[in-house]
Structure formats: structure tokens, C-alpha cells
Image (cartoon, rainbow, N blue to C red; front, top):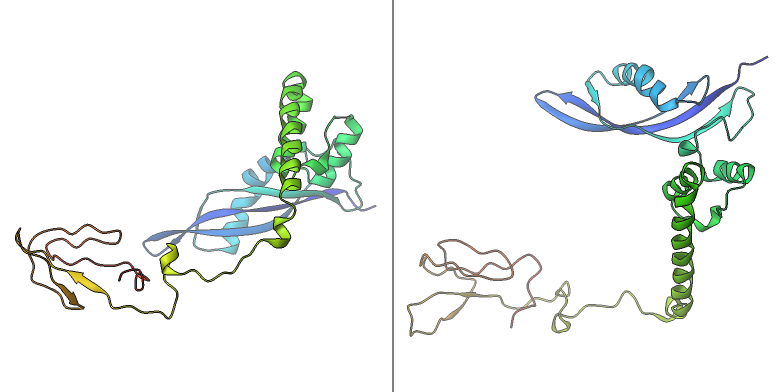
Amino acid sequence: MEQAYYEVDVHGEYFAQEGEKRILRGYEATFKVPDASSPLGVIKGKLLTPFLLKRDPQYFGIYTHHIDEIRPAGGGKFDPDDIPYRFQTKEQLRIYISRHRLQISVDDYGSLGLLRDHVRLAKEEPENFVKVQTKFAQKIADDKTLHELNKEVFNTGKVGLAVKPFDGGQGVPGEKTQVTHVESHPSGQKPKNKSRKAPKATGKKIKSEGKSSENSGIEEKPDGAEGLLS
């Protein structure tokens, strides 16, 4: 008879030494453990470092480690009480919730992390869970009402419209307008507009929405600013 075990999908990041640089790289792996009582501790403590050392000679140290899924293998059958609920998938939690008769609707949760947290509260802090679940149910109801009110806009709203400079948006690609530079003068004299010609340095700093150039008297425009000035 084949021995039952659990497969554990893990991903994360690790440090690698590349010359004088220490860089961050990612990893993915499926490990096998005899039981699922403490999978993260076993993998991190006994399997992850030897795995990374063998797979990457530049490995320097573990940065993060996350369990994506734990599932029975080798002829084993899934029992929701064999896997800690903080590692269970949505479908596994559906079975767990049903077995323990928790007042939680799995389909109301878009976030697996939030679902796991509410299962934890229901099991470990039942009094606090009632308060949290009441607020969550109200939020679900409010979100549903909001989407119902805006159902029509998802079919009639316009997107992909060209943005014109005079609307206050970015310049339309392809449209170019002569860009002027501002030259500072002593008080009492009007500045002259010059086209793409750098004036003499005055030591003054011109402020603008883009970059400012020290000791140049030139107002620099950010990329894509053509078309915004007249």
C-alpha cells in the first residue's frame, strides 16, 4: 500500500550573491511532508535551504516563504481537520465550515486571507466573530446596493476617449506646439520669449510644474509637455 503524504505548493523570495551585489530572486516548489500539522515549520527548517542551495549556487539566504496549497497525495484522502485552516484553499474551507457548522458563506469572500481570518475568529473568538460578521454582512449589503445603482453605467459609460490639452489632460501624441523658454531680467523689464534657445545664466531659480534648473534661468518642461503651453 502506498504511503499517504501531503504535497505543499510554496513560493517566495531569496537573496543571491552575484559578485559584490546581493540581489533578490524568486522560487516556486512543491514539497512533500508526511503530515500537515506544521508544514511551514518543516519546510522552512529542513527543506527550503538545501533546495535553494542545490538549485542556485549563488543562494545567500531566505527572504520570504508562503504556502499556496496543501493537498493529500499518495492515496490519502482529504480531511479538513488534518490541515490547519490558515493553509486551506477556498474549497477546502467550504468543507471545513460545513463540518464545523460555522455561520460563514464562502461565496461572500473575494479574499482568501479574509475568509481564513473569519474562520479563525469563528473557532477561537466566537463572541468577537459575531460583531465582525455583522459589520461584514452590512458591507456586503452596501456593496450590492452600490453595484445595483450603477448597473447601467457598466454598459453605457464611455472609455478610450482622446484626451485634449485644453481639457486639462496630457498632450495628445503627435501634436507639437512651439515650446518657449523664460529668461529672467532685472526688475522693470519684461521677459522675452525665445524659442528653444538657452538664455544667459542669472543665478535665479524658475519654478514650474516640471523640473527647475539651478543657476540657468531656464524653465524645463517634463516629457510630454509639448502642447500644454501656448
